[in-house]
Image (cartoon, rainbow, N blue to C red):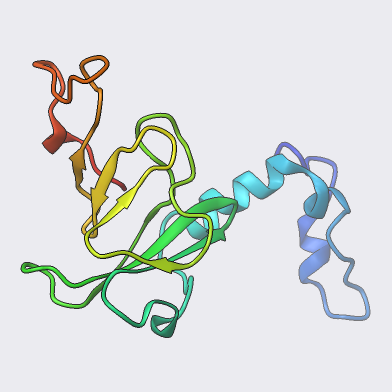
Length: 150
């Protein structure tokens, strides 16, 4: 923001109301300002992104966008995490396809509509069809355990 606003005196914004001036238009329209705010304001902490009632039952999925990122709220009810609420990037690790477009419920997995990669409700990759070629669902250099939604 410093480079973008080099000619703007930010101290003017903080003056008493009768002397203060608002931020320049660029602060509201320039994508680089938005990216800088996203990194400095949202990346280092937490923010309310939704409500528990949006994913009220086990297997409930609720896609949403926050600060320009497609995210997926998931209600998991697995043996290790009873009824936990999690949020992941709503993007398949294989080809970057959006995983879930509308709120819905699943029994065990989130399946990518592009190539069918499947993630369990804790975000772990559980199936990668054709990863070794057509009809070959494993490959020596590909470790399913190393890939998850983040």
